[in-house]
Length: 157
Image (cartoon, rainbow, N blue to C red):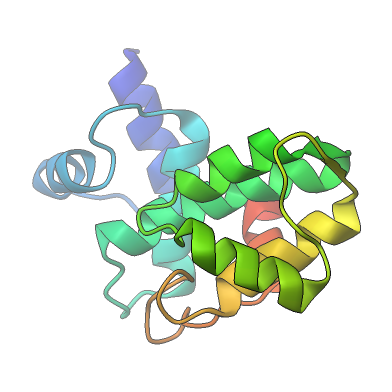
């Protein structure tokens, strides 16, 4: 079986039903354009299964991918440069001025050469998730919680 076929079967298995060739082609072109891996395919299938009647746009899906990358930082201490790089990789990232203001509000200033504990990273992620402009946008996913995103990543992996 080819890699494309393996990814499609994984999507169908996670979704719990088979899909047509046309549907798979649309999913591949819209959501999975570029770098495609098993985790991404399973994550999209999980979203479709959890929210079957919800329109999940590509931007929301990409933001979820970025937030799952941020959650990987919760396992260990992270340097400021890595955290800043991940925040800036979001489709809409806050300006440096906004990051400074949030740092003052959180009591955790973001500096490239400083190391951050998982609790400090968690505070930054929660701040991003709850912001209407930079967080997860969707009617049911809007203002997502860290718990929801953590559950999403546990099911995917």
